[in-house]
Length: 427
Image (cartoon, rainbow, N blue to C red; front, side, top):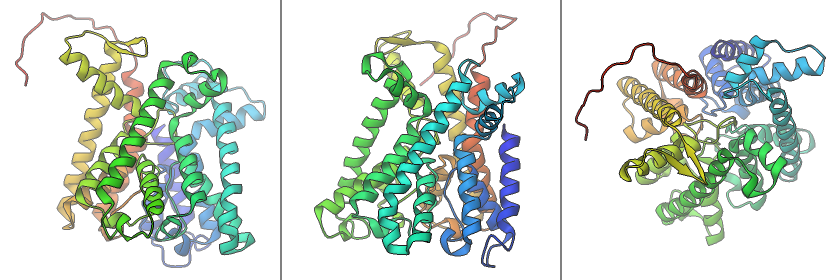
């Protein structure tokens, strides 16, 4: 699976480097960086997407975002099924890995759900966004802007066709409703969306869906209130807005975009350090499993909290919504979280060696890359070659690494040799 994504990145980078794709000021490393950012649905950019790339180049970026967000094998299986070619066991195994599933059952049904939900949401989003972009840019380019941003939003990519993202529409109600609705829907995960469509009652939902929905609501409300409280009087962000309603909308948008969406309606570079630290935590958590979002995932974060509570209560099992979780889930969560933190720390260490910028800005950049968020405090364009390569590696690992590791850790292995228990002192 990792090889498939890397091949797509290379093909995308070469295509974006062609003269047909840009206006002459894009180097190969810039094109390769953009391709990596699009395939990993991150949104970090070293050149302005709207002015540096032609409409053809923007179409290529949108295709890379779509394929990277929904998954390469999802596309392949859907096309093969549509033309009547049976999908072999090897393709199903890779698809299972790509979708972070533990079994081969109902994969075809899940693929159909993914495409129906994705296309439906993106079409509705494009139609609604056209009411804003067409009057501003004309029919042809306005419709394309609506389609591009709808694809980018649903796939949690964060690519925008303006250098200041969506800050010019900071107090536009339609932007503050449609765009967040798209990346929240894409970030919930296709399993949750399919579960909601099939059962439509809270009591009938699976444990995963209940944890994902309740966790998303709690994190969104908490971050909404905290962002408003921390930035209310900051003249560079909320303090520079004219009305209370505009501040509330801006707080809402930044609260939800941090969970791997990548758009922004205020200047991220002007954030207080405390707000940046809060957003880094949210970026590391990310969205839902089998979604277009990145991060360690909301359910992983919830299981970590449940395991901590269970430890202090001296409980041997975890309980949530009348269900219990076993040791395997806890071990997988610990492994994924540890590896994720190590990736962020190593990436930050290497980048800080070759770049002398603000430490909080560098940490924000690396965390954003790993969480495939795309928010930046202005460091992306200032990075040297080593820094950009490191960020590309972190983006790739954030999209593929922990997910692949989790797939292998989910396999059950029986030890052939057992050793007597030992004791170590912790804490």
